[in-house]
Length: 275
Ligand SMILES: [Fe+2]
Ligand SMILES: [Fe+2]
Image 1 (cartoon, rainbow, N blue to C red):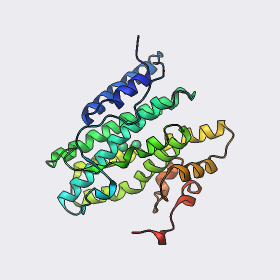
Image 2: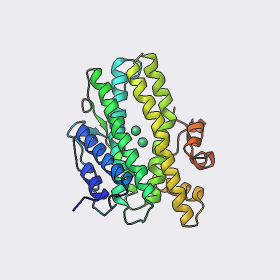
Image 3: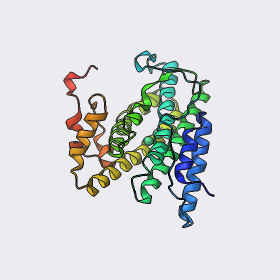
Image 4: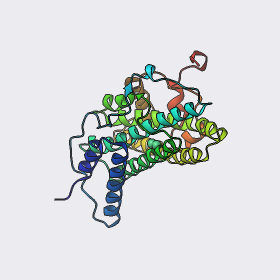
């Protein structure tokens, strides 16, 4: 009996080592797309994803306030920034496989699965790219402590597909579009051309992930006869802890199908900003 897509997703989620998780995910993505292209798609199936994905023993996970901050102007600071990004990418691999496995009781068109398998495959590529840069700098993923709170958004929205789409791709990944150009500048000034190239790949591909989020969020709201903007505001206020932080990358958010009237009403006033 061949495995279903949900089974493949759970295999990735229950693999602890970062590089191994990514290698398995990329193989499973290739299997899914080869079967789709051959006209013999894998069944989506049903599985029981773990509440929390398996992760390596290292990095040590600390509450956000205890993760040491370093200035990005120094080589050590740039390593810390890349390490934090590798952690985000690994979390994103699990987030995308989790949305595939967790919501199979919602009947969705096959394109929904195509989009998240592609996004999961790209996140694995991103993790590998950032790990390669870290290793070229004499460090590695696991060498520094990392943020313990990253999976919280997934747990909070484990039984709410619209909530998951609102908070993960449309808030968290959209935030990535806001901050990545500043990171690219840091590595351009270093200069670190390998890091710049990796970040430019990530920046280009993340627009697609936000777009998948907004596409399927709008699709679900449309199917249910709801106003997507109102639902988005209600879900983000319910599940996301804190205000959205300007400045926003309005151009890339627009490219990803995220209009200003979705995010501006959820923003903290700039004068209230602690920074
Ligand atoms: Fe990514
Ligand atoms: Fe992403």
